[in-house]
Image (cartoon, rainbow, N blue to C red; front, side, top):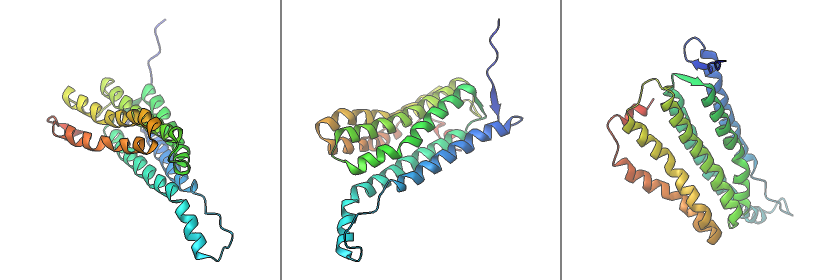
Length: 218
């Protein structure tokens, strides 16, 4: 018995199903970004009229505030990349829909590692859990990009050199966050600093941009 064809939801004809995937992704991002702020608790002070106690309490909350802005920047960057990715799609098949759902699970979960990192920035487990979560988001982003390329889901077929460049570029954060895990068990703060390695790595990679790379822009 022949296998049933897998459903493919295209912008035309079955556009509603295609848009549901995009709108659901945006909704998950909006919720995750909102929950980042909810995780920052108000400082507990004895004298509610004391400005000094409140300032001291806010100073204690500084790591949580920093972790909020860090995660907001991380999720904001991933949202922009996801927007560009979806804008290039002509269709979404069942496999891509499933990969996207798993990807969004880690997006939705990120507020929890953010909370742990803010409360325990010098704990190797907190740093590692955050690195694993962000690494999974970046890794699944790469998986979806490769699947769309191989399944012919993009609006235009990318040259192999452009597809390979995009794969390497989206995979660099995975390498940086993976490297930070063993570093964090030696020195948690150094592990956090390792996350920034993807920035100079991206700058070096940009020097080898193939022709047609800007076709990835919406």
